[in-house]
Image (cartoon, rainbow, N blue to C red):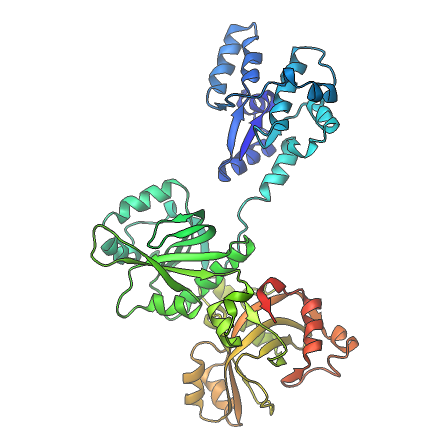
Amino acid sequence: MRILLDTNIIILREDNKVIKEDLQILMRVIQKLDYKILLHPKSIEDINRDTDDHRRNITLSKFKTYDTLERAPDPKADLNFLGSIGSSKNENDVIDDFLLYSVYRNAVTFLITEDFGIHKKAKRIKLSERILNIIEALDLFKKELPKEVILPPALQRTTMASLDVHDPLFDTLREDYPDFNDWYAKKSRKGRDCWVYIRNNGSLGAVLIYKFENEIVPSKPPLDKESRLKIATMKVSHVGHKIGELLLKLSFELAIKNNIPEIYLTHFTREIDYLVDLIEDYGFKKVSIINRPWIDIPEDVFLKKIIIKEEDILNLTPIEISKKFYPNLYDGIEVRKHIIPIQPLYFERLYTDFHRRQTTIDEHLGQFIIEGNTIKKAYLSHSSSKKMNVGDILLFYRSEDVQSILSIGVIENVEYGMKEPTEILSMVGKRTVYTYAEIEEISKKATTVILFNHHFHFKKPVKYNKLLKEKILRGPPQSITEIKHEDYQKIKKIGGINERFTFN
């Protein structure tokens, strides 16, 4: 995008006075968005008319740090334009007309000026939306900045430059890429963003370096030009805490927030490869390769679609949709819907990403709640219901305090009547909120074990009173309760689930 700055904006920035905070922020935002800042040739001419040689030379020296709008359109022959904006009283008005005409003829996208006269003329030709003062420009451009996700306390948002390239976490990357250190230095200078987990000893436990792209990926076959989130580097050394799964979950959320339809990464695949096992579990698919001159084996390109169409899911079962195209889900009439009551204590541990949750001191000391890191979660119940099947929808109702449906998931597996605690533990792994002692106690009665994918939290809590009013419930749910598809549709509407990610 090309932004034209009026002389008054440049002078505000370049004179020897303290720069206004709004202007400082605006210039940083423009720089971060990589917009092109231009000056109009007539602005230079205006400065050249200054009779104070010393002041003129200083001002011109500062103006030369900016690019000039080349072949700027001339309004002199456009009688319709001149007639619409009104006559010019002096040379300054003529210069204003040239700046305004550059926007009128689409030589630039916006003009930023504090000149009231230009804004007044812009109204006459219905161009006010593109003639901005500093505050208007700041409000508009800030909306274009990439939207961030909320990280758990144990993760930090930083830049590559803040990390030690010689950290052991990067050793295997140096083996794969002989020029890794040079690449790292080059990308660091560009301010590349990343998420990191830093251990208590100061070393890196995990890192994910990412980049927003909108270009062709030069692989074989190439990936067409498209907006994508590239996972440039994803490494985890602090294993056993499901940090890799957490990083993927955050990547999906980042793509959704920024309306990015695809995510991709490149990787040298090994015979035993935990990263490939993980990403394929969540819908990444090998789509092409990149040949590297320093190694005989090709580098694989893995792509995941975030935003999909009906044709992408033809002939897939509900659980296949949940897995291959997560976080998309199938919620049509063919699958059952179940309300599951969950106590606040367990909800807090299972859903550490819930935005209204109070984080713990341990989390701020760098510890993870492992079951909260996962996409695949586990729930244990003594419910007598045996109507749940793979692919069914789960609606989690937080009891006692909030008394609302807050989250939605899809059943991956369900086992009824389990009584052996070791079998239950081997099935749920680290994905459940229950300790082994609690599992031993629970399994004294026949236990239903549900493995499910967590997909979304509702934008608005679906409160108990509303569930009563809509006759979805007759009383507080004490156990797993199946509801009608029509009632689920009401819940979905009330809760504000984004239907872009649901298929029926």
